[in-house]
Length: 170
Image 1 (tube, rainbow, N blue to C red):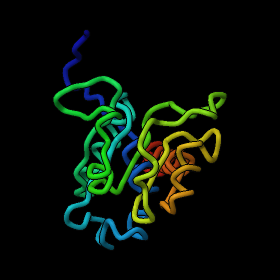
Image 2 (cartoon, helix red, strand yellow):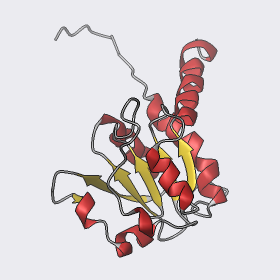
Image 3 (cartoon, rainbow, N blue to C red):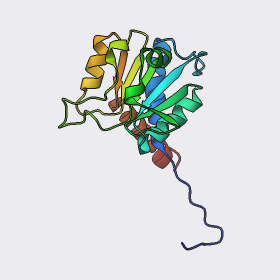
Image 4 (tube, one colour):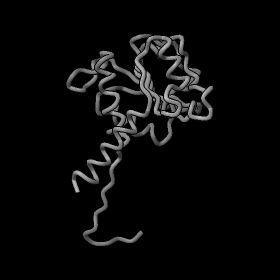
C-alpha cells in the first residue's frame, strides 16, 4: 500500500441510508418507532443472513435504537439458527429483514425458513430482494397481515444518497 502524505480517502455507504430512510415510515405506521425516529422500548429485529448487506442493516437498526439478532444457517454464539426461531423469539422480534438472496429471481419459489405461522399484523417484514417485486417471503408475511416492503425502496434511497454525495455536494 502506498502512503501519500496529506492524502485522505473518504468512503460512503448508501446501504445504511437507503434502508433506514425506506423502512422508517413503515416502522412508524407499525408503532415500532416514534416520530423522532427512535424505537419504542422492547423493539427487536431479526436480520436473516450474515453477509455484507446485513452489516449495513445492523448499523441502521442501531441508529434507530432497535435491538437485533442475526439469524443464519450456521450455528454460532452470536446468532440464532432458523431452527431456533420459536413463537417466543418471533413475538419479541417484530421486525424481520431478509438480507439473504433467498427468493431472488429466478428462484422465486424459495423463501427464508422462518416459522411464518407466528407472524402477526404487528410484524414488519422487509426483503432486500426486489426481483421479484413480491417475493414468497413477503407474500407469506402479507397473508398474516404483516406490514411488508421490498428492497426497491432501499435501492431508490441509495440512488438519492449517491446523488447527494456526488452531485449536490460537488
